[in-house]
Structures are given as structure tokens and as C-alpha cells.
Length: 320
Ligand SMILES: Nc1nc2c(c(=O)[nH]1)N[C@H]1C(S)=C(S)[C@@H](COP(=O)(O)O)O[C@H]1N2
Ligand SMILES: [Mo]
Image (cartoon, rainbow, N blue to C red; front, side, top):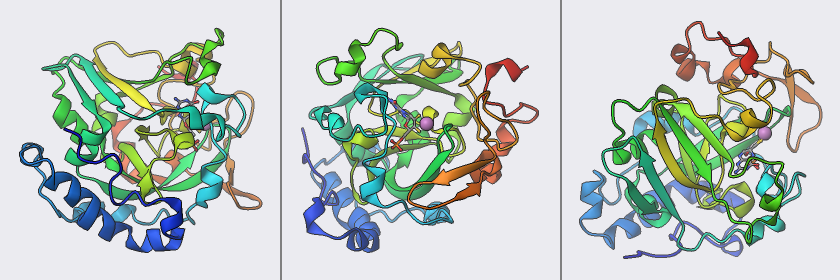
């Protein structure tokens, strides 16, 4: 059963100014979108361990402010990397071809039971929160997005990976009618990315289903994407339709193209230059000048403990 195509919190652009949405977002999430969705899905909410009108957990209040201004919505939805729709930053028109109706995510590989779940079900079942995260592209530009989504760890609980699973791989759709760019044979389509299980379980790893108080915009990776804000942006894969648990470390899209420039770990580190440019500073979208880049993009408190002696370089050739 589908509860509604468009949650109540997914206001159309015309219904509210960004400021209105921003100020009311928490109320919308707690009181309308989440509550309405669950109310129409009796049983499932209990199974998922969430109750209607559950407030945002207090432990997540630390992500309300990214320490920088939120990037204007109009800019964030028109300056994107989404190679399925072209290799320039101006793919927002092409990305309107993305058809998210009836979108499902297949969860397979080393799991108790393989499942296929719709994004609507995920939105209804998962504990939604808003998180304002910084995002640092390996190309040395950055933005700040007010995401709506849920911790990847909540999805791990649903997926029930086997103890033999050491990595989780994410895959983007592969549909040459929707994304004609995927006919280009020099790219290793579909786009894939992967995390270690420790990284996937980290509280920062976030599955994004909305932004700016609305369902996720197509150029930003609708209807569901990953965001790992301490890693270079290419790890944050868009428009996911499959999640696979593996024992072997998967080789991702960019790693397959050029492992010395886009390695598996890809943790933000201003000390280690990309082979072709510095990573010491970044251009913040919508602002003049450049600002220093921080180790782990400023999220070291949450993630540094996972890595120990592991070097932070981009390219795999530096890794032990
Ligand atoms: N499927 C897919 N996911 C992707 C990409 C892509 O080309 N295809 N680009 C990545 C890169 S390089 C970046 S910087 C971010 C950009 O996210 P944004 O357009 O929302 O800023 O998406 C990442 N996820
Ligand atoms: Mo990127």
C-alpha cells in the first residue's frame, strides 16, 4: 500500500519561502510528514520501532548548524555533479528526466533476507531528521545542504547484514532512456560507491531523501542518496536503487576510472594534494574567495577514531 506520493512536509516551491520552510521544518517533520505517513500504515510503524509524532532524538541536535551559511537552494539545485546527465555542472534541466515514480531499493548480498523496498516505505518507516551538513567535492568546491533523511545505521538494522559482511556497496540506476549519457561506453556504468561496515555504521553516514524541507530535488540525486560529509563528495552516491553487502572491498566508479586520483577511503585532508591540484582550501558555492579546508572536512570528532594509522590520502597508491 502506498501511503501518499508526496509527504505533507514536501511543500511545493510556491507554498512557502525557503525561510518559512526552514523555520517550520522541524514542526513539519515531527507533526505532519512523519505522523501522517505512519498513521496510514498501521503495523509497519511498530515493526520499525518508531511511533507517530516521535520528536527528533536529542543526540542529533548537533547537526542543526554546519558552522557556515546554508547554500541557497536555487544554487544547490543548479550546480551539480551528476555524470549520468552530463559532465558539466549545469545538468539540472537534463536531470528532470529522472523518473522517481515507484522507485525501489534492492538490498542483497550478504544479508539475512534479500528485500526490495520502496522509497515511500523507507520515508514512512525510518526515523527522519534534518541535518545541515558541509559537503566538500574533490574538485575543491564546497556547499552546505539542509538534508532530510535518516542514519544509514537505521537502514542497516532493517537490512540485517550477515557477520561476514565487511563492506556495503551502493549502486545508482542504469537506464539509458532516462539518462542517455549512460550510453557513453567509456564510463563504467552504473555509478557505484562503497563504505566499510564501520563507516556505514558511523552516526554521520546519512541517507538523504529530502532537502530544504522538501522531497529531494532531481539534480541532487532523487529520490534517495548517501551523504558522508567527512569524505570527498564523489563518495556521496545519488539516486540509489541497490545496496549490496560484500566480503571483498568493491571497486567504485571513480576508482575504476583512476585509482590514483579517486581512492576508496577519500577522506578530506588539506595536507594531501590531489595529483593535479591542491586540497588546502576550497571555494564555497555562493561566496567570493576561498576558505581553508579542514581535516575530515571538520568532522574529525565523529570519525577520526575509525581510521587509526590509516593514511588519509585520496589515491590508493599511498595506502598500506
Ligand atoms: N550517481 C552519481 N552520484 C554522484 C555523482 C555522480 O556523477 N553520479 N557525483 C558525485 C560528486 S563528484 C559530488 S561532488 C556530489 C555532488 O552532489 P550535489 O550535486 O548534490 O552537490 O555527488 C556525488 N554523487
Ligand atoms: Mo565531487
